[in-house]
Amino acid sequence: MKIEKLRALPIEAVAERLGLRVTRHKCLCPFHDDHHASMTFLARTNSFRCFACGAHGGTIDLVMRHLDKDFPRACRWLADDANVVIDEYRPRTPVAEKTMRPFDASRYVRNFEHPWLSSEAQQFLFAERKINPRVVRWCRLSSWTDRQGIHWLQTPYFDTTGQLIGLQNRNLDYHKGDVTPRFRFPYGARCTIYNLPVVAMLRPEEPLYITEGCSDCWAMLSAGHKAVAIPSATLLSVADKELLGDLANRLGTSFHMFPDRDAPGERLFMQLREVLPTLHHHQLPAGCKDFSDYYVSSINNSSFATEGID
Image (cartoon, rainbow, N blue to C red; front, side):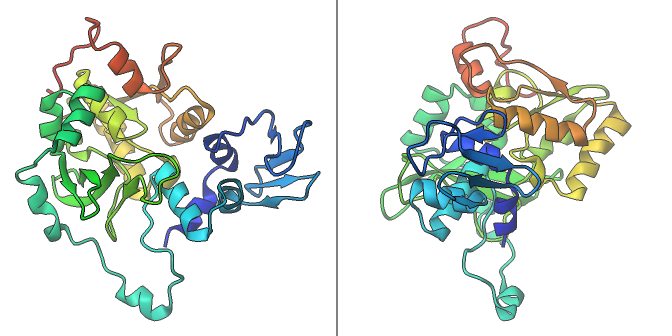
């Protein structure tokens, strides 16, 4: 179970995702009529405490109290927001640990042999996000509709050899406050570095762009750059770090990133730079919150190649 990863998410980043304005490790406490920034965030313990009303706790406690959610729903909200794969929320017994199912790729691989896009998926990808159809085909995006009529976009995760190792289901009908989550992941799905097959296509000293999510990765590919997505530096395994380090050592790959224009985006850049010391920072223009936003706003600008991957 990945609850510990939710608890390890930077507390200030979680507060900012909740809409709290954090300045110098403090903010107005949302749990009482606060006018003097009584809530303090403690980096050492990754926790919060209000010295006026006494509210305190960690990341999950903050979400539970601020959004009035119970423990499972607060965990789901955090998991959806940070793209953390949660297998289940029930405490596991020793028997449950032994019977935990691994990811069954054979159950899903057929979905991506002949991908199908619903009208809702086409609206999202082509009309809203302006993604190049060649990129959609390369990424083998597909879609489905559940029994409740909710439309889902299926994003497969492949390893460097093209083997299916996980998938993400994105709720295309999602609105904040919905009971149905924004993202769903099958049991055992490995969804850390996205678009790993592009690694095999890299030429010596060719740049590789790192994005914060699948949508930004599609936009970067559509803009003509080779790219992967890493939603959280804290989720990178030792093998992931070794893979990225090997690209730098073996191919002389240079890494580039357009962090989201917010504190969590800059924090992710700094975390990744600890893994990739030569990671180059590129500033998004004012008014663009992420690379997808920048790409859509600039789609008619000749500075974008819009040819997709090579």
